[in-house]
Length: 64
Image (cartoon, rainbow, N blue to C red; front, side):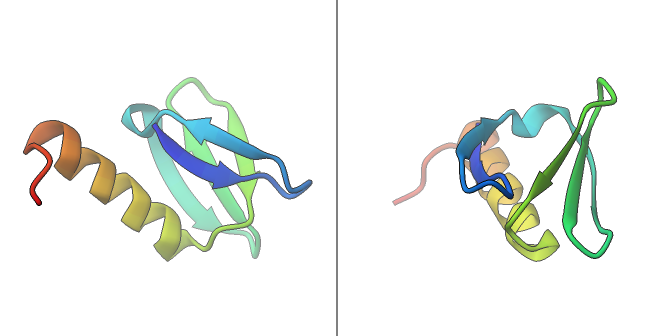
């Protein structure tokens, strides 16, 4: 799971395993494999970095 911030300021956890796409519309829109779409405050690059970090920790292991 990655933590992102909705536009109303609420923090939410998003399952990085089901992120299908991330786009700037100009706000950042995350589309999930189930078709749900989430507007977040983080930039596209920030969401990508969070997802990559998640995948590294889960699939490679937590490297100190």
